[in-house]
Image (cartoon, rainbow, N blue to C red; front, side):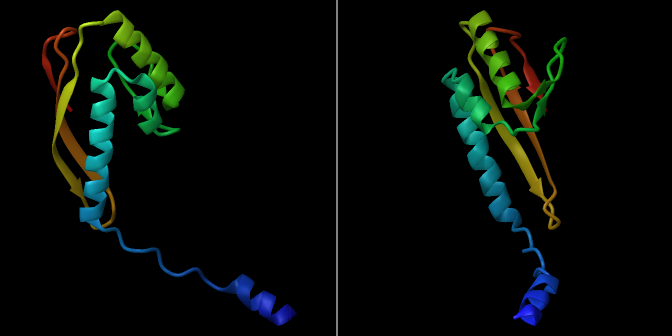
Amino acid sequence: MFIAVLVAACAQPGPAPKPDPAAEERAIRDQDARWLKAAQSRDAAGEAAIFADDGIEYHLHVEPLIGPAAFQAYEVKFFADNPKVSVMWTTDAIQVAASGERRDSNRQSIPGRIGRICDG
């Protein structure tokens, strides 16, 4: 029995599964659509639920928002301060490398606040 436990303890884990770039892109687009829907519904809690625990978002003239609670607090105040704001963005491209690394770009339009389009 001791030998079986020793062998099991020394067993190497199998190789990690290879990333599936198409599946990763679909998952990112699905999450992006949920985020946009929450933003358009002015649902700060819904947006924060999508935000990663260690996520960081940057805005001009504001300390970095770290984590869902900070993000939600910012969005609650943003929507209160900008009652007529409407949010829209489109994700132009998502590139997922065979290694699993990703890059995306988008365009945001937030009329009623700054009235301009921001490329990200």
